[in-house]
Amino acid sequence: MRLNRIKEMAMQGVFLLTAITSIAAVVLICIFLFYNGVPAITEIGFLNFVGGQKWAPTNVPASYGILNMIIGSIYVTAGAVVVGVPIGVLTAVFLARFCPAPLYKVLKPATELLAGIPSIVYGFFGLMVIVPFIREHFGGGSSLLAASFVLGIMILPTIIGVSESAIRAVPESYYEGALALGATRERSVFKAILPASKSGILAGVVLGTGRAIGETMAVILIAGNQVQIPSSLTDGVRTLTANIVLEMGYSTGLHRQALIATGVVLFVFILIITLSMQAIKSRSEKYG
Amino acid sequence: MDKFTIKNMNLYYGDFHALKNVELNMQEKRITAFIGPSGCGKSTLLKSLNRMNDLVEGCKITGDIKLNGEDIYGSMDVNILRKRVGMVFQKANPFPMSVYDNIAFGPRTHGIKNKRELDRIVEETLRDAAIWDELKDRLKKSALGLSGGQQQRLCIARALAVKPEVLLMDEATSALDPVSTGKIEELCLRLKDKYTIIMVTHNMQQALRISDKTAFFLLGEMIEYNDTDLIFSSPQDKRTEEYITGRFG
Ligand SMILES: Nc1ncnc2c1ncn2[C@@H]1O[C@H](COP(=O)(O)OP(=O)(O)OP(=O)(O)O)[C@@H](O)[C@H]1O
Ligand SMILES: [Mg+2]
Image 1 (spheres, protein in one colour):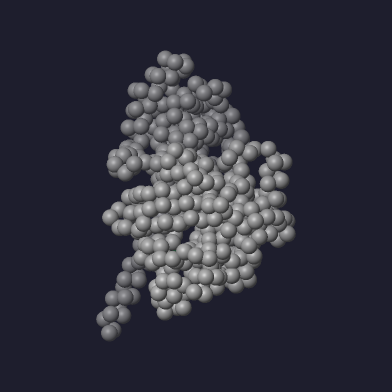
Image 2 (cartoon, each protein chain N blue to C red):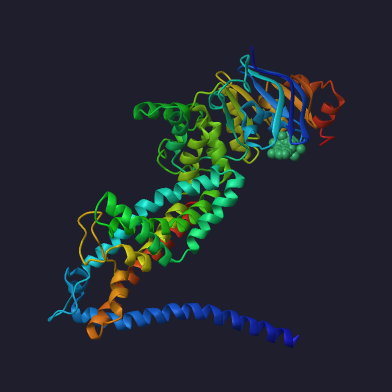
């Protein structure tokens, strides 16, 4: 009897410990980021940092404006969404509602495999296939366009996976209700099922956005990395993540801290994305 | 006049023989009720009339079902058939959108885009379904916020909005309280001036109150079909009698 009780408490202790580990990891990362990043932001000045267009950490005097990179990250992410969302959502619709079973057995693992490919491989693919293609047809090469396209593909598995389960979660009665009014199969899917699953699909899109904005390796290889606000799709662009990786190796002092502060900005973006994700979830719980 | 004529109809779910040699004519602008114990095939027959059974894999139908003399399993377009033969389900299934969009769904499906025209149809069908007064201030609100009874009447209105000839109702009141049930029964009695109604019910009183004709089914066979008052006052078949007097099923 007593032994059981001790066992139970021990198990509870183990569970608590594991739960605390992941929370501790998040908290520690936060502390590390802000502890190292925030002083740099205060030293540079918040507005000079996030609003400054000049990034010249090796100049004397140095300037640390990351606006170009912020905009770069936003552009690249938006581009990925423009490419990835229509393809991803339509694929999810196909998988959930139209795909014959034998084909599903092939397609579904294929979309999952897409998630398992290391990002450096996506980068290679972009570098060897997409960039030359763009250079040949549109001029430029490593560019916002190349990064958007490759990132768009990279976020597909997230969008497809989440959207497909959202679509499958819609009660069949909506589909039948639409058919019974004389709607075609396609119309019933797109006008009755899809609207009913929109908050789930939106969650998938937000999750994909988070993946795109944080992506680093693939982007470095194909985005060109020029510190500038691109004026066309074929211009090069540098993202926040690329900025950190490219310069971390040789940076020292305030430069190094400014890079960590860049990480803080990235973290804030991710935070916003996660919070909007939570908001969507609680909203959909309320309104079905 | 006969709206639906069913001749020598058999239905199989895979190997399972769910409906056996059904012969039945249903009259225009009348209410026909299907009764019978659970699993006897009432819903199956009802769903054959607007071909919702097409969704069931392995469902096979032989024999004839004619709507106004036209074979519905022949060259008739299934979407046109479903526009002509509307359906109300056991569990109210309004779409998760506004009341207005629920009603407008059908007309939009069939090509009506004009806002004024849609406004007119929405008002007219809600009046037809006797819930205009309850809902006229909530047209833009989500249909999921309505009460169960209101949702079901909304679904009836939604079905009426495409101007069907026939309305199929599968135990449409079984999930509702007596007051809501009463409203829907009243509605049916009013609607039969314009529509042919075919309903499945487990509620004998309901069949007796509102239907003109009643068909009794047992184990996939139609046992007896007659004027409702005759079925209930002097059933010809012993099994019908046993069922309606509650000694059975
Ligand atoms: N999709 C299906 N696949 C296989 N068998 C089915 C299917 N739908 C119904 N059946 C079978 O067909 C028979 C008739 O079913 P049906 O739903 O028509 O009965 P019902 O008379 O409507 O019963 P209830 O009063 O319970 O609604 C039952 O034995 C049922 O198990
Ligand atoms: Mg049934």
